[in-house]
Length: 261
Ligand code: SF4
Image 1: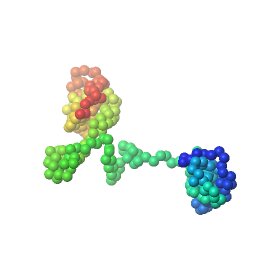
Image 2: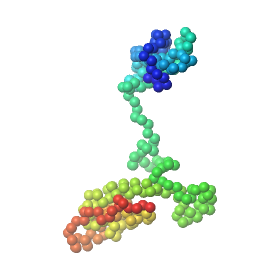
Image 3: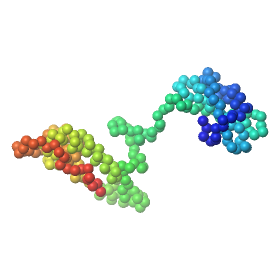
Image 4: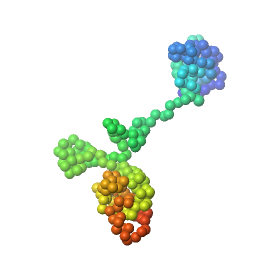
């Protein structure tokens, strides 16, 4: 019941008998005698410190609405050589069968894709592993307005960019998603996006693995697709059909080991 002492198997008689004192303290704290129930136990702490004297905790069932399984813990004490028993503290604690709220989780760990609504603001944390600082926030450049202007003009003005981990996560997510090579659409496609005239490759290190679909008739129009995704609106679909009736249903690009650096 207490973690700052050793539970004694032989409670001090004076403290063990002070049930009424402990109950009165619990009632005073609760503000209502009706919510302090039956006496449950008396557990003493052998502090091993003669100067602290004797310490014991009485517990009473809680009948507070909404606190099923909780109990009032009233710790009382008596100094060495003294007759007077005093009340140390009164707390309401959860018992073994208490109904407890789930552990608190920070909001940024609770959020799930799709939770963001119009008008919501979702700031990334300073230690977001998906982002890394660029050179513009180092000690010299961060305070230099001219360096910031120049960096912005040549396209390096962002203070943070996606980290290797962030890009790897995005690639894996999109690879496993509706516009990746294992989707039903891709399995029945006449050809992969990488050979399609409507495929718009991304800039940067993911260029060889990802792009956007620019075909208004394709389900992926305006979406990021992997080079080995594909759909029936492939620009060469009719040409492929003339050459062969074989359905292309295997991945032609291996994005799993793609080097992001
Ligand atoms: S039209 Fe189909 S195959 Fe072509 S880029 Fe778009 S999704 Fe890929």
